Amino acid sequence: MKSVLWQGGWTTRLRIGSGLILFAYAFFHFINIGLGLFHTDYLHSMQKGRHVVTRHDLGSVILYAALFIHSGLALYSISQRRTMRMPFSTGLQIVLGLLIPLQLIAHIVHTRYAHEVYGVNDEMGYIIALMWPSSAVWMQSVLLLVVWVHSCIGLHMWLRLTRWWSGTVPYLIGAAVFVPSFALAGLLTEGRRIWVDFGDPFLRDQYIEHYNWPSPESFQAMANVENNALVAFLMALGAALLVFVVRKLWRRRHSVRVKYVEGPEVVAEKGMTLLEISQANGVPHTALCGGKGRCTTCRVIVEDGADKLPAPSEVEARSLAAVGAPDGARLACQIRPTEPLTAFRMFRPDGGRKRAHASHGQERKLAVLFLDMRGFTSRTTGQLPYDIVFLLNRFFDAIVPAITAHGGAVDKYMGDGLLAVFEKPDAERSAQAGLAAAADVSLDLARFNQQLQSEASPGIRIGMGLHLGDLVLGEIGAVGSSAHTIIGDAVNVASRLEGETKALKAELLVSTELLQAAGYDSDPADLQSFDLRGVAKPILALPVAKASDLFEHKAALEQTY
Image 1 (cartoon, one colour):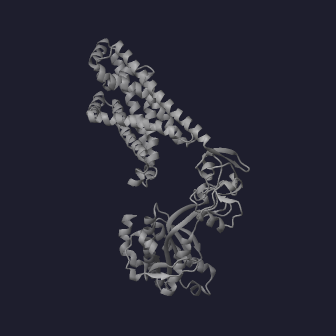
Image 2: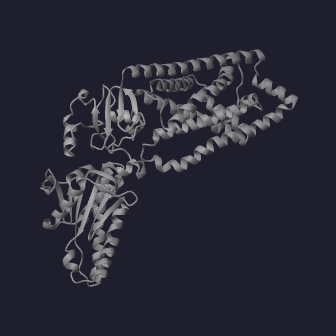
Image 3: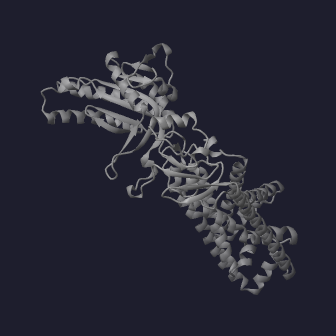
């Protein structure tokens, strides 16, 4: 979890750290305002408690350092962007972030600055009275919403890669809506009360004395400070945009022109792969593996400029040879044009197919279970078809719940057998789920056989092959009638291991790849090596006479996945 939350360089970590400090401050500040919905004393009591931290020398240094660091890094990130094209959520967060200083500067000057320089008692009542009922109260309300939405987007972008975040989002949305609503309700309630009090000349004079209300000259001086701070921010923003433009012009001078046959002509920075150039310029370009060089779907025919490209690497050459690619074919994810180039995309996304990228294939390292019923043909010889279907359905009803209970899914049924896959967030938990499911299948089968015995029917024996390996999950078939399935060597290995259980008279064969991933301790002397048909290298696997023998380890496995 730690590696996911804090991955990235020092700028990313500083941005996240400073953002969390500011988020915490904003959260408690908004809750503080919301207490005005109940009573003024609650409002001021919490503010005094917050000031113990934020008005302390150390707290002030941390808070304002976070503010300047976060703002500075935001401007720095703008200056370092290659393009202003970005996802909507990212663009919205940047725009909201740039709007914050336009109102935050005025807020800080008339509160903390006024308190430190002019001795103003900047209680919540003073702040609200200062704004009420002018347009300032609406501008500060907008500031509250902008800060909160900007913070929530940032928090979501940071935590969305964690395993627990997606499950808590529905509940956190309620909290995200509640906080600003609560704060605005408190602001309106307290504002109306203070406005009524200010209508009484006697109470008004008391308020002015209590808050040490600034003089007109003080307000003018604060307005000058506010304007100067605003100009400084706009200059910093202008400098960031200037750096962005200069870098873009410099890259253009050090750029390369790429022309796509039956497509646009673009100019891109040297050093990028052709696939990256396509993606950066919005040019549709198929790449099912995401540009990792693990497929050939991004390949192009270089019609002009091929002689200026470096020769294919060993990996690229082997991939092209595997698909019998014609002369001039190259992988777009492997070539980095430095001279003008004309390319024809061999596989372009077809808008008419309406397939998402994930439907074309997603590579995962998962556990696969191949299961088959023993002696099915001899058992069912002479039986009526309906009786055979009835038996098969009873059999699957008995064992499949053990698979689904551990997060497995039956990919397909094959007569008297099935293929199941365990889609978990990582290989370790997928392997552990596969082992636990295999053990429970064996237990459920034993119960089912007891039921068959009571019906004077022979029991059923099974064989299972369990393996962990790289798979591609995607849709296979014509659009509109395709099925979600899995493809990969791991499926073949699991199938072949299941086949070996017949000669061994074992119920389960588990590959060492899966055992190691699951953290399952096994005696090396118990492992056997198998030369499986269609598998390049021998596979080490553990034969298990009864998969339910694994049950004693299942409880420990379930605790970890």
